[in-house]
Image (tube, rainbow, N blue to C red):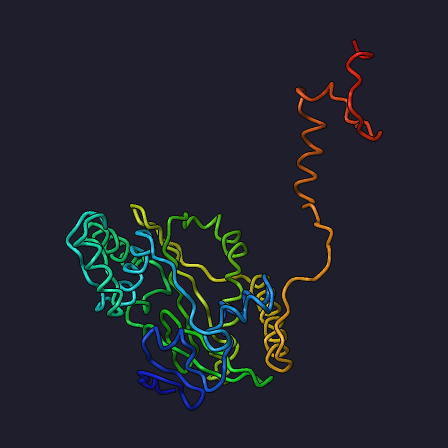
Length: 323
């Protein structure tokens, strides 16, 4: 499928597109569309949260000022995708001076990405380290040459419009690989990635992206892989490439089905409910209850505690009679 250049406004049909990030985030689909980030809100928060965050339903969102670690991550991300042309280097050690802050503000106003010189050096270290490591991992040889920041717009059989922006994608007659780059302060150690994927609902992103690309390329369904490239910001910039296992993809697919159900219901009814309007009973985690029970049983420092509490009504202590 040909990749279509698109610079502004709405697209007219499903397809693969190359477009500015701000056009994608404003939602270029013919009708309001579901993204993986909105899907996560529908699953883990409420339809009201999804409505509030959607650019076509409630309007553009106010963005908070980015932190230096976030700017480093953005720059490294762009360098990894060979999309660093809009990086604006500010020759300063920090954003404390008036001139540096003015350059930063001007860059953001122009739609560019400002970065301090020492932070750019760090971002380049992250990117170069990742390229070196990926070149040594079998199956990752095509990462660097893959098409970057490709948008897919598709229509689900339910009628919902869906959209994704893939960091990198390789498409052949035999199959496709979607690459997603994750930089950050967290460790990229393999043994911790399953918990990290679950904690950030990354399985939703994986299942959602595979579903959308499969809608556009039905002949490749069942042969589309989703891979994360986890990279550590700090030296030695270790990296791990991971795919979700069968259980993760199964849960991700079920969650995407739930998100689609709630999305379509919201559009159809024109209502986006919030949390339940009633008092609920908060369920204490079973693991935490077991942990405390183990402490009562095994901790010698609490062996002599009387665990029964006085359940009689409280009343002021009679100090005279107590004396």
